[in-house]
Image (cartoon, rainbow, N blue to C red; front, side, top):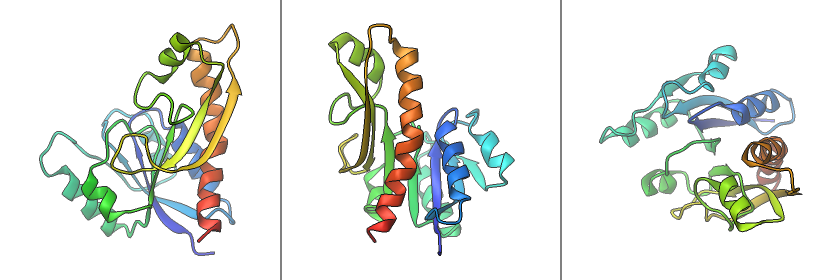
Length: 187
């Protein structure tokens, strides 16, 4: 199997990145993590890049031409697929055009509900009975691309933002690889 060279964009802890790296080392998993990009030079997820010796770089998204640098590096490393794993920046339409239907994101809610930030506090305020995650294609509208995989659990009376975050992350670790397998099985 020829694995698709993949870049993972991160901003924080990198737990989904770590999960994807581990899965990508399995013989039958369709991607190989070949590059990691972070918009946060202090992102803890960079430690996984170092641990597994995967090329990485920090991109200052406040710079005017940062996107050219991103595209240059994606081409340099022959990246054909992109995963957003806790990347806290909106992807520009130029990058989306260059990687049409080749960028996916994991979001900590059952989209189309609770797009954007602060999903867990908004769920609790609304009195939701279900929570979960959605892996979707990235398009020009925030958290609006086609759903690939969705997983859910029922919220109980003892849940708070922290417990919802923990339960959701456990589902993300299953949903993200499942979505990748589903995408490449259909190609």
